Image (cartoon, rainbow, N blue to C red; front, side, top):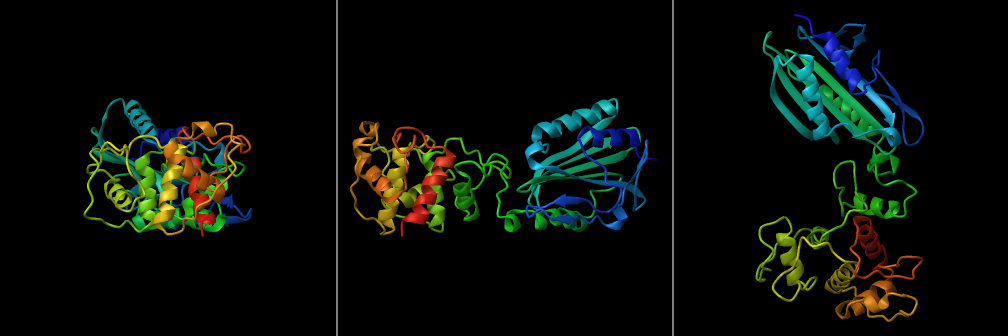
Length: 357
């Protein structure tokens, strides 16, 4: 039984895949030279108006690769897109299919999805796998389609995906893989630093979300991981810190005086952290690390100094004197009660790591 070629060809064209009619594709790397992505000979794909054929174990397998400038690329490998593909298949086969499995995964540094169908009339299985990798400058999409067999050999698939990774990733380009952190953004270098130092991870594999807020629990967890994720005993738990990802981190921070909580038995781990709270925690952390030095600063240039809470004034003074905080609006505002974004947190932690000796 032949593959339902028109349906699969339409499917691949619908998701914007460009066919490569030989076994390699050229793409510019960050260093502006080119490289070849090698596809195993058994997966060379020929295309005509109504069929996709490549022989493998008496079945049919198609592999397609697309390279696109990252700034113009869409992240197609998402749950919403997977649901769209399922609906597309169901319509194309007039409801004569059963969804056997669907999975959104990460594999070899790529975001991926895998979908498996059964065509009830023929008893044939349809397999679709799509992987997308966003490098510093380019997006690469690999698509595998097959019938009556599992996804292509895992070793060969990894070989293909890794050939993308090795040539154009953060390890060779000195870049970062986030589509929302451009090189001309004020936070590019600080985000790059905390990402490469494994201090702050991305919100996912392709977004940092620099303008999103960051919580008190997240900040404490970051510092705790910087200390090697130690376990602690002999400390009274906060009433609102129970069994979550930040549990051990908050216990460590409380025992070592990095945090004190709200004073009523609560820590507020899910509350968005303010800039003065973050400065206070970093100041306390410097004391824990025995790197604290008292200092005084002229605060008259900050037109919102009066907004700094009394408990935070010495910490804010320390943060200004050491360069942990540089201020907003050309250094005229501290914005102490404003919530810290992920980019601002990255900046303050970067300043701490590079300026506190």
